[in-house]
Length: 106
Image 1 (cartoon, rainbow, N blue to C red):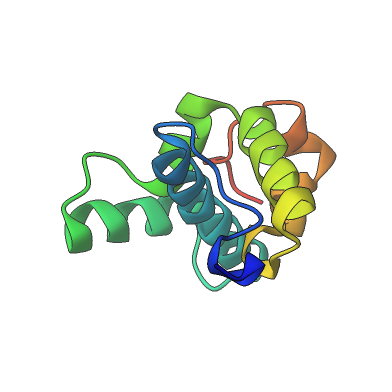
Image 2: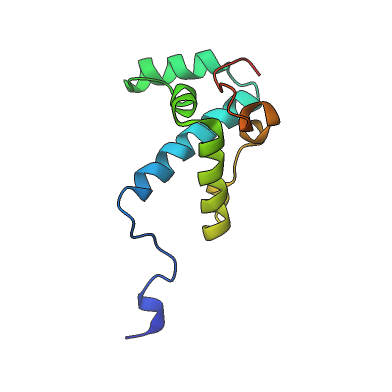
C-alpha cells in the first residue's frame, strides 16, 4: 500500500474534532466583532435566535476562557498549518488573552 494512503497528521483523541470546531466558531465570532460587522451582543443574539444554540459563540468563549480558546487554536494552527485555525487578531488582543470577557464591547 502506498505511503500516501494514510494521512500523516490526524488526531485520534476522542472529542478533539468537536473541541476544534467549537474554538473555530468562537474564532469566527471574534473576527466578526473585530471587523465591527456586528457587536458582540448582536453576534450572540443572532446565533441563539437564528441557530437555536443555547448561548452565543462569544458567551461560549467566555465560559471556556479566551486564553484556553487561543491556546487550542494556536496549537491546531501550528500542527496543521491550516489558515482556518489562525487565531483572530481580536482574540489575540491582550485584553482578551488575559481572559477578560469576549462579550464586552471591542
